[in-house]
Image 1 (spheres, rainbow, N blue to C red):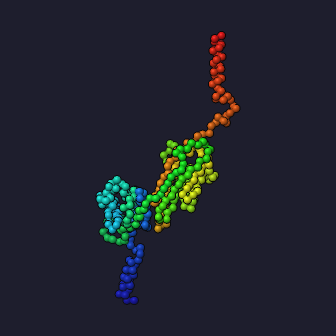
Image 2 (image 1 turned 90 degrees about the vertical axis):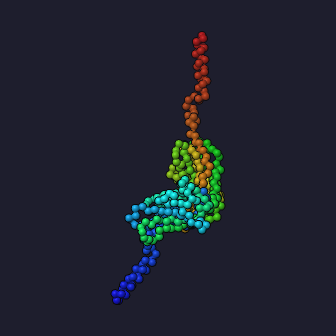
Image 3 (image 1 turned 120 degrees about the vertical axis):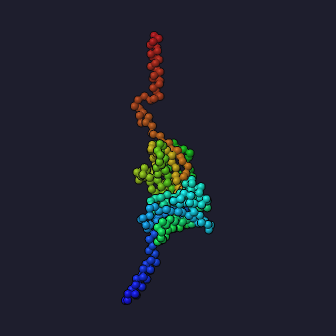
Length: 315
């Protein structure tokens, strides 16, 4: 092969290599869409960039969206006043925010979704390298749907039990979401005097039960159960309540959908009403009966002795 032909072949191969997918150095990544979220709930979009030159002192990100054919700037890590007036109040009150995870990753969050937030979102990396070599932005479709999740507890307004008594609570949870979704149900105990609630037991996809750490031993012995007893009805059973169970009992239902990447994405969640639970210790007076005079007899004996003393003084 002549030298000129060799040069042509090498040049052609190099050109083909540059056209191969993945041959670019920089790539920007967001989750696969579309993402479904319910009105009033939270949307989080993580964004990560790979391949940026190590000499870049700090990577800056911008988020924008396209809604009904109009492009809107929302927020930027380098300029707090970057967004359109349409979003400025929500950025100022931090209901729309962008938070760094590390120098190459951020999370964009809307804490209170509106129907008008539906659209195509773009995470863009501000190119400070002076040249382009790859994809400096990525897009994802967000669908905002109605919140149809309904949760209600059929428990009484308060409960007073004795140590060792059985507890049974009923929850109704359902949703009319058009998309194919699933529900997860978890009962919690918020003990008196403690900051954080303890999960009692959860019922997940496939009706799989999972006890919380504090209730694992009782669950293993069959003393704690959560079962689905109807199309939208869930029953919590605790065979024997303990003194440490005193507090508030409530349930959380989470509606989720499986995304294109196979991950479970929560759409909405709601809490049931809280039920105060009082647990009294078992009385000891019955166990000690016959070992001495009854408490009700003591006042009578004392009165009799006082009468004898007064009678002796008179005489």
